[in-house]
Image (cartoon, rainbow, N blue to C red; front, side, top):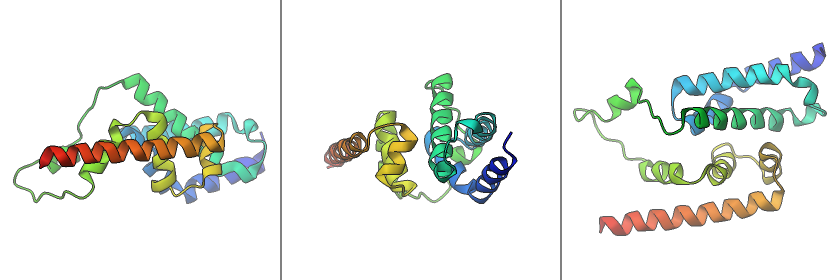
Length: 166
């Protein structure tokens, strides 16, 4: 076990725990599952740290672990959606409604995972195309193409919903 690398991973995970949680949550949409994804990702990172050939790629390597772990969890649970108390409280009629980005969130959730992943990593995590390609183990041009296709799909879906309201 490389003690220096283990320390570097530990420091990175601690310094960026909020970003890791946010990334996991953007996939699983549930606090407990997001925490489970982060915890499992940390375990996987330490179990497979020998696969990290260059410490300069620690961020993209760990993001890939989180994304894959989140996707694995979603596959396990399939379409079973458990609503937590916080989400349930948002739908309580006695509370004030907040409509910010609800349509965008719903539309984004309707995208296939491979398209949603690119949008989340690019716009919510503010990663560069090269980093996204590394995380998703795809070609940079594939990532760009998926981003543009997903934006087109989002635009079409948002326009259809808008026209349906008129």
